[in-house]
Image 1: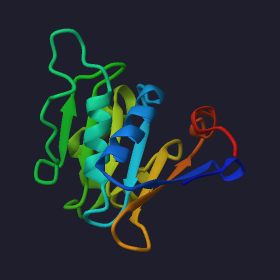
Image 2 (image 1 turned 180 degrees about the vertical axis):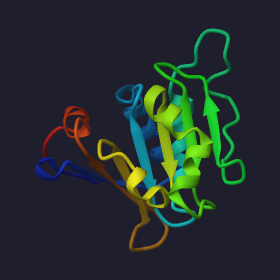
Image 3 (image 1 turned 120 degrees about the horizontal axis):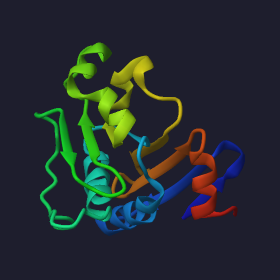
Length: 169
């Protein structure tokens, strides 16, 4: 099921399996570019890392760099992983173990926001450092607890991008 609310810049989708998550990532990959932030919201096990992994693999790698089959581990313990991709390097942050937003600066946040594509798991830990212009992916389990649902919420230019890809129902 797809539900689009253009006025609120929201798209709701069912993600019945891992294949659906990868398909969504491939659909969004052409939309991300330098300076973009994708905030991944959801409980443990809701699919944040699965989506991030699929998006990173869906982006083209520069010539001579391993791409779609590259190992993409969760940055739970390293806090941030970077990947050489086009149109910009991807910075994948997992802020679950970060206690204070100001600690994020030590991880290269400014460089990521200026020059990269920034994927953030547990974005609520950023506090006021979370940019207003971003794409939010809110992942949750469906009512039956088996499948997942995602609500994409566009802020700023992301409203237009979501409308271009998902249209208006």
